[in-house]
Image (cartoon, rainbow, N blue to C red):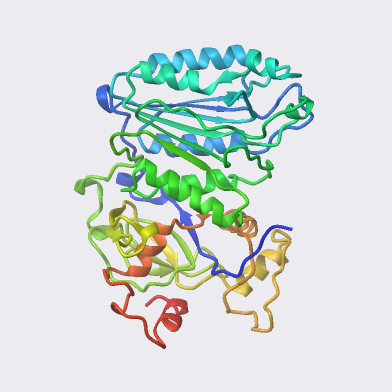
Amino acid sequence: MAWRVAFLFLLILSAAANLPPAFAQQPPAAKGSNLRVALLIANSAYQDADVKLANPVRDARALGDELRRDGFEVTLRENLGKEDIQRALDTFLATIAPNSAALLYFSGFGIQVNRQDYLIPIDARIWAERSVQRDGIAVEKILGQMHAKGAKSILLIIDASRKNPFERRFRSYSAGLSAIDVPEGTLAISSASLDKVHEDTDSNPSLFMGELLKEMRVLSATAEQVFLRARNSVARASNGDRVPWVSSSLTEDFTFSQPPTAEAVPPHVRGAEQVGPSASTVKAAPSSSTMPGETFRDCAECPEMVVIPAGEFDMGSNDIAVEKPIHRVVIRRPIAIGRREITFAEWDQCAAAGACKYRPDDRGWGRGDRPVIDVSWDDAKIFLAWLSQKTGRQYRLPTEAEWEYAARAGTASAYWWGRDAGSGLAGPRLFGELR
């Protein structure tokens, strides 16, 4: 059974298609020293394995969409054999210019041999460790070639620490991937801890990719912050069962997103707008005519949403080690956040429709308009998919920064009411409706 914990279910709806034209248009990828290129390889249909992986292709497509919005020139290739991978890599390396940013993503099977990591093509015939060295693609070799091309920022994302059928054929083996010796200017993340593996569960996107994409959308976050926060989010959501591995030798900050110019932000969403600190459902403002503070629903039974403008705030604390350092976060697009947490009544609609298979117990506290409890991350994803299909709008869970931006409501103190905690303040306000 999936691990469940009592928590307030928050979600966000992305509605880029209905945003004003200035937000719908994406700038073309820059050239020269500002060039951003990415190669995404997703392998799921392995010819010598009795399993087809569920997540690689879907995750790669979602990541490709996000990277294109961030100005990357993206090449996405699916289900490649060794020769095709090598050709894709050769073409990719040829596009890397001095001082550019280059990102490589691989999802599929990976194996370590003699503490070296290898990406496995779909046509690999692996019966021994020497087969891995013959048919696999060495990760460190690829990174060395990217570095030799003069890339200023090298980003590596590997989701290859899956339990795989090849390793079971070995007399002795080390599960998962080993530490990668990254060249200078490289930031790498693997979907699991060193020497650990995980199951390839059927979710869209996967837990790892879902958390990574949410953090990439935090405008001012550096790539290192994105990877570290994604790691922490995956660890929390899996109850510590999965803790992605992160390594960095970056010498300068790199950010995925770029702030819009003042001209690109419609006047009605500039600056900060005072709204309450609680959140339950969130989504982008449905149209350019929707004003901050306005509320709406996508259907009669849907969660009520309140519009929050684009803006910025200082996130973090120098008093708590894990919150350091204080950094500026920019929310570049208007969003709408739920006036209340997802309720039992709203969850029960999903269950009645046959989409949500899990019906949480209210523990005697009552159902109706009370916030739903004891639902897992996987349960939440099912609810999100159902609500998105029902409304024709794309709902998702909010990032930590998006929730805090709404909760702070323009304040800079430790709590929205001031510096000190006190009775009768946090509970009623936090769980009440936004005003």
